[in-house]
Image 1 (cartoon, helix red, strand yellow):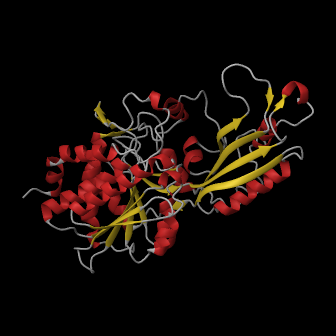
Image 2 (cartoon, rainbow, N blue to C red):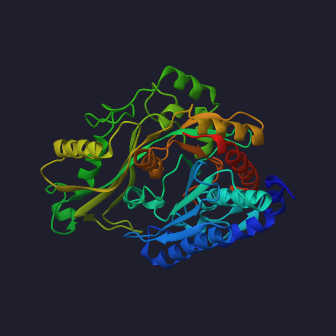
Image 3 (spheres, rainbow, N blue to C red):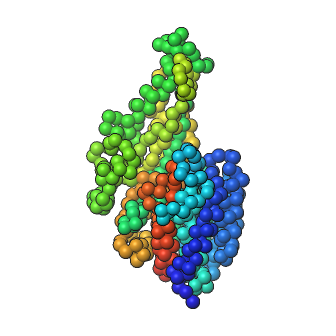
Length: 457
């Protein structure tokens, strides 16, 4: 009989073919036009988990369904591992910048290119393939396993919190595993122990009843587009710090040992500029770029719309202006509190010459995991065995709402085992997932599951 690792190797081609099937489904969660495809993706996960012996149910939510699959063959004395993933993806726009169509998976240069390849269908499928390999080789697992796979992560997981709270008994576990992050490189495995939270808002500014002739009314009516930019400009100081009063009050400071660990990771301003193509770095000068990205909160403008934007000239004074504004939050910051602080700041600085409204679109708390938790140390050993080096601990700048939800609701340690690469183009054209990362990811997942059979949190 083959070992689990041998079984995974033997079935690699079949697994890649199966992953391509999932990637062909355009499960874009933010647009109603893709609702049928969302359900197709949930059904695909249901069928795949059922085929390898899981008891699977599709649970409806007010928007997109959650798939829960359970395998309890290890018995009541064995620990339970909860594995989270999401089957929804970002919109593929701008489609014209893709080398190959975003939902026609293309294998080239050692990577699989498609929307969702790395975020998060490929990384989710790593664990499905690993469990399938263990079952094929051993006929059983050393732990009970529960999969919870949602379809709303890319829109902030608005229904996941209530779902987990309402199904806490069903999802009860001793530890949770999430693979929705990346490593620093093939030679630099990484464990994320901190994720930033998110507050996403929309600021609408309005003035006259309708658009006005800028020659007839310019200089006498406050242009809402100008007023909006004046409000936005007030939200940062000249060094890049957020100027909203009270914004930093609850921030937990970076400890000396954390800053020392971060400093050991070779990520410089030059690396940042090489990755992004930006002309220069920006932000709080007393923090390194790595600390700014993972350890400090931010306030960013994600979009602006106002007035005439088509080719040519139209001398219009727009009646309305809109900005999408988000905050990435760190541990101990409460999204509701930050929303109120931003609202009060706007109330203070907004001129009486315009009307404004701030709307909360999405919110999620930051998460912080104990680096010394037994399941985290099991992940360290699994990475070290299959990547040839001990993983680095890093703070991640992004947000995965489920991590804080699982920590707060189920009271379990959450280990973040990422297998993507920094240049996987998440949320951008030509998203990809390295086949080498897929192979090592499956091996690491097998090793991790084998180790945690004797661990209880």
